[in-house]
Image 1 (tube, rainbow over the protein chains, first blue to last red):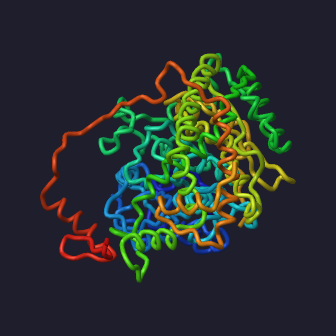
Image 2: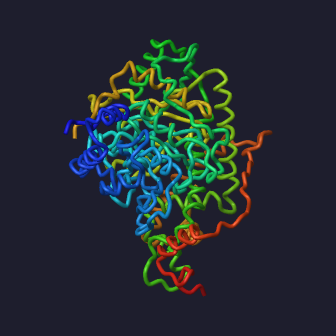
Image 3: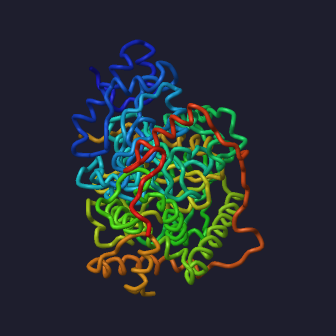
Length: 483
Length: 95
């Protein structure tokens, strides 16, 4: 069979429509690619059998024959759902997430369950109970997290598209480190029904693909109001085609704001900075007006994120108690003992630490200093960003300060690892959409890096248009790791 | 800021977790570093005229869903229980 590993969705669609390949052959092709190469990457927790993959979706639709993989915190009916954790051992989802249903209704073959940091808590995919997920560009380095599995699978050519989840950067960070396009949408654009909750005011499904057009294609299918998720945006009950604006040009009179207190923040690798400055030059050549802006409030984003996300996760993870599903510790003396033993044995170290932090910042004597102040600063950040968007159309920042690090590099410094979220979490906190766009390689051209575009709420079409214009004049989306 | 062993033990109880004695130092250090960083929100937090959050409850009618479909889902859920009896989840004694 020919090498379809890095074909785009539309290239695969063409092959299918010309009957050069069948859907069954494509599914088997990608399953075989996992089988051959995934041992050194570990992007999949489970791959399903070809028969059940094809039986789960109709034989029609815009994604028919084009397999994707879902992060293992997104419910697929009749399949295990572990969230990368021991505590959900044996749990099988009784229903599909809304996004899963919408993909299946377009014929999408869902090929398996992708690896992730446990309960989406992490920035490197080192915290999975199923082992770390490694970077296809250098398998001694991490893929990034928490959506390392789905993103690495796309980067490695195991699938043309994947769904992850975002709470503070969990699709954008691995997308930056693996050289693919990663979207965090506007909060409420995609239904969270069937996404296991980490931070309910932050969580969104995210999309990983190798091209901007493919990303827009997937968003067009899964976005939209859902009666089962009251946080979804109500006017969006009409199908939106996010690919319609992709003509390779910037809008007239387009102004791109560069957040200088992020681009020139302490600790940003000079090579990463250089690649981002080169990208800004490309935007100038395309006709963009560049405006340097400063938003001091977003320097506090990581501090706010640490408090809000841990507080919400302490509440959301209280349901994992061994009573109704999943792991239950054996030989417990009473109910209290069962709760404590189950949760201590079932959760990994990072999850336990975050629950403790979360309960600390919510507890009597500390809530005012931490949680209430964090909520106030969150609002101040949102107001400052709204103000900034009065003078620019989109804003640009780094995604991370450095490329992917070696496995275990931050084992003794969890705070430094957590601060990987520094550039990404402000978009999650303020509910605005953000897109990680590959912009070249650093460290002797070995490791990918990216810039981040952020826009006002519901500006995904503009984000895609502007990212696509850059993609059209650069080669990064045509470069693939050799496995 | 310095989190004490006693505070960690109290937090663990609230969280329905166990922190063993040989883990206390490491957990204290981790929490202290994260919370010391997070405390910087106090540098700019201030009251503002605008509300911190918009309260927009969208409620559906409080209507029970019954019928065969719901019973099948209930069955699937009960089947996953570590221990169950009839339609009840069985747990160790409470008192």
